Image (cartoon, rainbow, N blue to C red; front, top):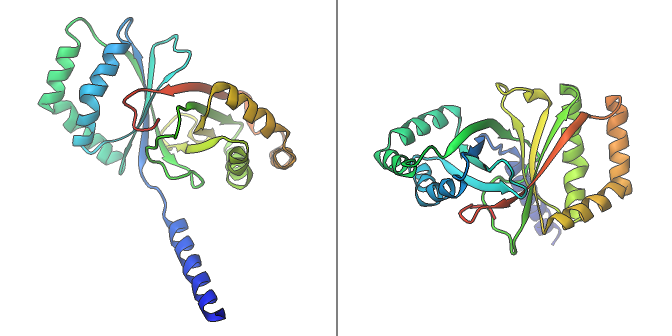
Length: 255
């Protein structure tokens, strides 16, 4: 029995080590579209009926599509993944040249352009992120996109350690779902001071309740104090935490 137990432990340890050694090397692209006035529904239709399938055709992986709950700027936020940056550029070149895309694009813009402005972020997964893949919750979910800007590269490392060792586990304890955690690729502005992540909640009110309880947890208070002692103060710049509550589109792979 002891031998069997030892073998089982060795197998589990080996499996855990192999899984831990696997690093997600993909490149992720977060794209934010600002729809032209009155064109957001048409933009949704183009993604739903054409764009997503054409992305898949050209080896672009659809991760998720969202709109802010308070969408005063008519935004669409979505995330794609690629094996690497070179594959990304090649896939987009093929996509742009696809006759089916050209036809769908032209037909959708007979009455004017659908997109007024596009913003992009290129990212990679942090080593503490859960597996980044589409998922569907058991019930409707609210998504929270959070972006942290730290005071320095050194404090970003401390922030990563705090999430890795404490925050993620405590988020789960208080009913928050950790979905994706990203760092920016080195060519992006403030790449060495930025953390981007996505949580899921049952509702906006549930998110508030969860965060209120989380912030009072003695383990969180201790972890925050310890990291800020090492960092010489707050790890983030003033107003360096941004939060946007979003809902998934009806065609999003992640809901």
